[in-house]
Length: 227
Image (tube, rainbow, N blue to C red):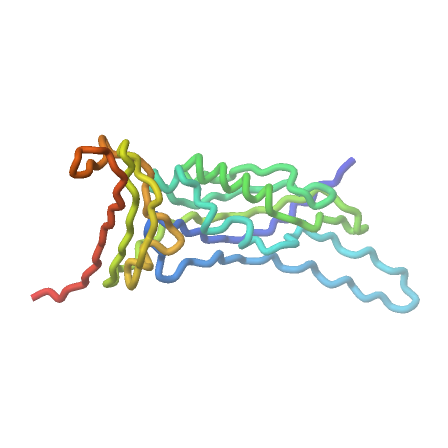
């Protein structure tokens, strides 16, 4: 019969979303409260029979802050502007694997709840719980993930120049960023502002023949004093 450990370790991770075209000035880091280590064995005297080591709860082998990261924010939750805290419990098997994940307290968003359990099951690694005889037993682990939508960074002065091709049929292609400086560079860092699509029609040359044209657009960010 398997013995079950009822010791729980608890931690808190903060996860921040990155809305499109916005890079927070200081992205948040996951904050964890690591479980306390097991108590030290009692030292026996030379003529006393050795005591069995104390039991120990299941403990993470990798950093819990790496289980859920900023880049994992579900697209659906971003679109719906959802955030919240997910509290869940894990069942840890005899070999340290996550065998079950249960939502104890929902964030109110199905997308955030589902992503939490899915990511933790994929990434969490544990040393199994052991009993007083150092034999592996089924263990449990409690965890909370705080999904937070950050406020965008303030706009800074800058300029963005981008261009794209419009084909004879109006299809848009070969979009490229030609330059991005200042606040514009922040806005497009790691992002692609080019949106695929097409227009109702393309361009015509002087003779009325359909031709391909490159369209260049400039976006200037200005921060002005208020009179």
